[in-house]
Length: 164
Length: 374
Image (cartoon, rainbow over all chains, first blue to last red; front, side, top):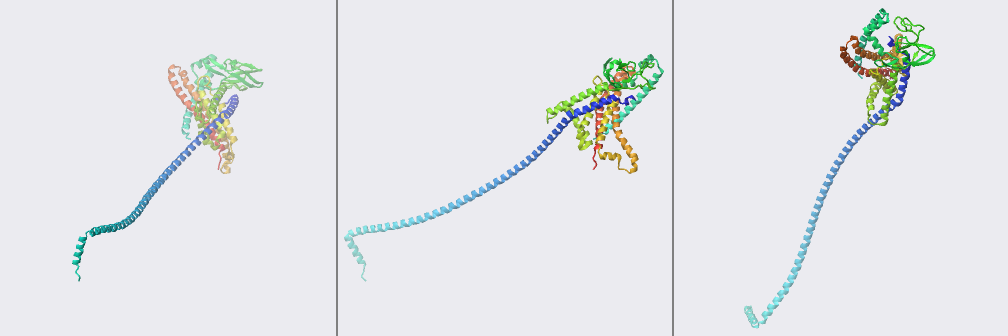
């Protein structure tokens, strides 16, 4: 069949044209296109990798943050506890101190009171003695002013005194 | 990759093609009979008129031509360029005055040329009884000597047009990558990128392995060349309509390219497999010739497959349209148009599938030649 016999002219033209086309496309189309596609694919891969890394970093950071918060909470609790115990101890100390101080003061006051009391008693005694002396003097003086009565008294007294 | 559906489709196509070829042979047989019985020109023409020869019509349309039919009686006469005994000769094909039977002689550089069935021959000294300046054999084929015909025929023009189209498309695409560096594709670029990636990821990589990059320019070029020309051939009017990828010369060149790449890139394992296969030595008598034969049958299969599929598609569409003339009735038109549209849709698919098959088989053959054995 005629269709199955290749025309030599078209074979020549096709060879030249196809080689030319391949050369031109390879140089000006396929090379930049494939390079660009490859580059883009790489950049996409890289971006995805980076995103994955960022995600991991994020989870890591979150975990770290949680850990930090937990630690901080623990620390806060600890500090609060410490503070409370400190407060308690301070209060307790203050109380005991106040107690001892008070007791001391009371003791002191007692001693003072005792001292004062003693002094007052001495004073009182002194005054009582002087007063009684005074009174006695005055009584005596008064008594001794009435001679008749004295006489009478002495007489009575003497009367009473029986010489035994 | 799952290709079973493709091959199943191939089988169906083969059946269609086979049936059609049978139809043509029987038709041409009838014609030959009528030719031999009716000698007079008038009667011959009457027979043609009476009985529309669908086979001849279709074969004429799928063959190459020195003029391009536009519409009605309008033709574009294409330049004829010949490499003759006296060097290059060129003239317009209109100098033949639409003669295709070797009657009109064009004389250039002291040489006389005639055109018979779109082929140019050196004219005989004297005309035969039909006024043809060619000697015919018993099958009515001219047996005159021929110059080398590198004319810008319909197919050559289509070749140039397709190259311009392909270059325009892919330089535009490449420009898109330059302009929008690292960004997502846009416009024509986003139409072509998936197909380029398809060729790379589904054709080249699985068959060629890590060395695929070296063969990408060839695979991409051959894929898009076949695909674009298949589709251009389906366009029924001017810039399209030629049967370029259904021309055996074109498929021959493409298959030869695959053959050359396979042979020149074949590694020692490939040649060892052919000349020293792992069989007992006395088997070499059978194995080596078979393997050597295989080197050639693979590209020949490529050549025939593409040629036959595309040519069959063209013949099919033409035949369906021609049903109107065969039945000589306008009422058959809706049926033939409906069928032609259906086949046209399938042909669009075939245009892609054939480009794909040619490319994947090329990749497969190259892959077999460069495969490393560990």
